[in-house]
Image 1: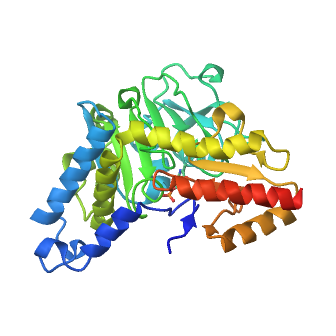
Image 2: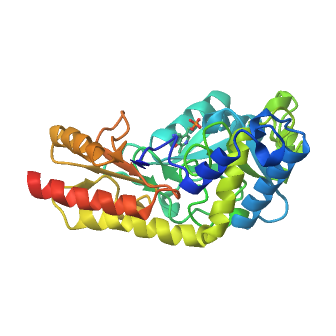
Image 3: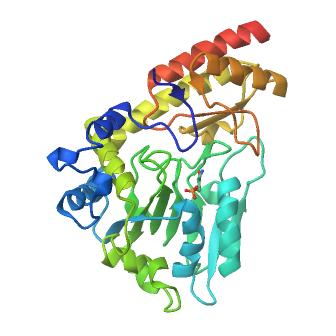
Length: 357
Ligand code: PMP
């Protein structure tokens, strides 16, 4: 039996995708080899690589002049690569601090150049992200960096600020809703939440930005290298790209990003409605900024939280423990998380409240 797996990442993948991958794991389409045993420059893998990029371009309606890249080192490697490539000598980069992940991006950027914190609500509880009108922006800043969804606290940008060069860490909400990519200079996301197993980082970059990179940046660390080589400068992690390709097919067959957004909002609303009608469960995020991907809440005591997590697990509702840095409860309900699992959680929560309040 499959668990209702609320893990924040690596996270649940569509069951159909796992089954398809399992069916062709040992012998990919009659070749007698697994896809992970083949050259990253061979015919079979090349078809997957190119289809995956095409599907992402189609799903996000990516305009001309942008490239879709598969890089490595996780989203964390993008934290320094962005300033290395895009923060010129004497320039300032604006960053918003909305929580733990934004803070990590800021820490790396500060090692490499001048950073202005355009807004800081990183430590506020209840948690939120900044609003566009509170940003104190630097004239002529190289870029503005935001974290579209704070995976740990459960706060999400609903409307994005306008900027000549907007950069977003979308690790935990990429492909969960439609997006106007033309408003961004660069978008990046680690693969292990909404995309694929861990191992690749999806980067969507406006090509002209990559020209800015100083000559001193090593070849492998330049966006330009990856654009010019279609993400095949070095050996790309072929298996995560293969799974991502299957996931993009699954998204296309399930209503695309408009379809996903509707389902995701409906799933999240089931939990948020429960918080709004209960004195027992207290949501961690400010209402307007509640994440559709990572729903976070507290119970009256830490003992009750531990009891809640234990009893939930006995009912097949797994990995609900909040991040170790903040405690509480977190239900990560990415694209692949089934609605029935949210219904089962809501039913369990009502029962638990009746028993303990
Ligand atoms: N940014 C966000 C918003 C994240 O949730 C995570 C991972 N949880 C990261 C960055 C870091 O990603 P990685 O582990 O792929 O480096």
